[in-house]
Amino acid sequence: MFSPGLRREVPEGEMTVQIAVRRIDKTTILDVSGDIDLASSPEVRKALLRELRVNRIPRVVLNLKEVRYIDSSGVASLVEGLKASRDTGSRFILFGLSSIAREVLQLSRLLKVFEIYDNEEQALGS
Image 1 (cartoon, rainbow, N blue to C red):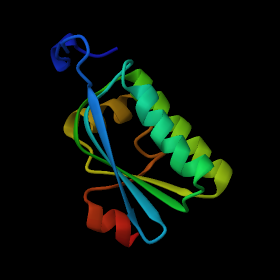
Image 2 (cartoon, rainbow, N blue to C red):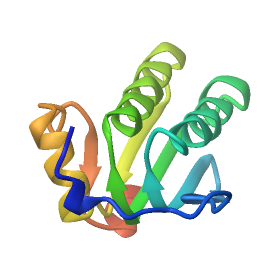
Image 3 (cartoon, one colour):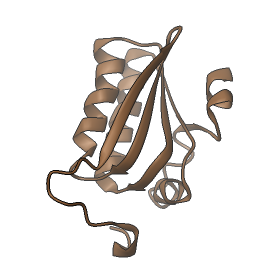
């Protein structure tokens, strides 16, 4: 979908994404780092849906400041998280979009669909 120059080759067996979970009051923050691509987007999707549909967290915040790359399958996982949040009455917030992630959402015409903030303080204060 996007320029191959934005991708890096990942040795077989190396995880392309890490997700750390933090909870503050009734908010879950998912700190994501690495690439959200075809190989790793199911992991991101699973983490989002667990918090939204299973744990019924009222506000899920996705920290993307350490995401280097996101492809269409990653965008699909974010859209599925947004749909789940609407279905459960939760808020789904993104913050810290890298220029690449912002560009992908803009090209997908989804930038205005998501609730997006520049940093964690703004996202939690909203």
